Length: 494
Image 1 (cartoon, rainbow, N blue to C red):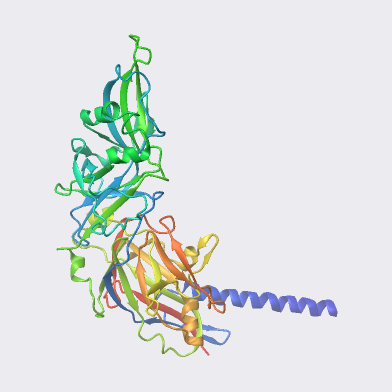
Image 2 (cartoon, helix red, strand yellow):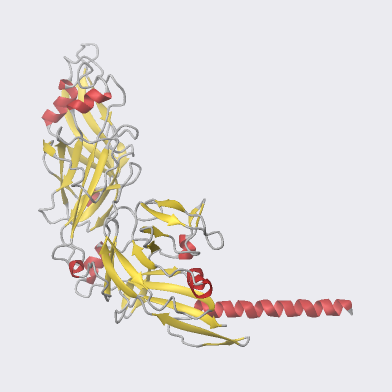
């Protein structure tokens, strides 16, 4: 009899698991607009949409890149939605030791050539349009400083001027940059090779030596202030190139031949100057210009809701999101709260614009604490551990789906169920939200309730965000007719 009782208990327990699993599955897979979900175990579960008010703002925080990040050069001159972008890179390259000298007899040294080589890490935009790249010398009046963390989007704060070109303008075909380079000195690929003038090679190989410029690093800095790589935006250009300074592919190659013994047999060789992570200064400047573009009609300083909103990766723009009816919701069980944002495709030129200028790989939904004037994590939902943020569970990675007849619409979903539950149950604060495409950024992180009394700064980097200036997307706002941004609630009444 005891055995039969245990058997009945096990059967009851198994049936309970089946009921709970079925209920959870129904809630998770319910499609938007399903209305009233069928009764499960006598509980009415509802599906509703909360109204959002949305508008677009320029990002005023200073964006920075660090020497381990991929940096950007290039120009975008034809993006009718977001406008123009120009990016230049300023940096120093050093000999590997001091006092430095070219091996062999200086009298027998014959200068061959000088080539600036940059490590190519990818592109954003249209690779079919070549870029016109020029290398210039930084002016002694505005030298780089290793003690300054240069803000990417504020070049006027620390202007870097130049005193002239170091070579002819090079034409870069982006489609060939991944090709291999195989010669006596190089067996590599993903290199941007920019030849410099012969007098520049002579300056580094013959004019400079261990008695003057190459005596030590500070002396070399006084002789040569560094390189400035610029892309001519006057010609049609629609791409940004990503460069890594720390990669071994980035270097100044000085080719020469000499005789170390004075004999007739000569040895052709190369000397490399490279980026020194401890000593080399750098500044990556990126300028956005929205004049004449569609976005310029939607950037605001007011609180007027907009049906179209624009997110441009740092340095760029963000979307402010307000949920006016959230604080007044009655107490209920929140099974799922999901904020959905969808791209509004370009009807006029879909294939070129949305294919070349892709949406950011990640958007960040954050709360804005107006009292502290800081961005903070979405309470109880955006979590950070030693492994990093819980982006997979929280949401924000770009996906693609078919919407309203468009086959490839970028979409972003965010799960904020615990945040909403705290508002309706404990009357937690309802924050104004921000949707952005960060590179290096910071959040005031507060752990989940009930351990939410202590907070600390959490620093995002490009590895968990986006490369600087990579990505832009036009989204439907809270009042858009076909691609409306919305907050979907699946809940049960108490």
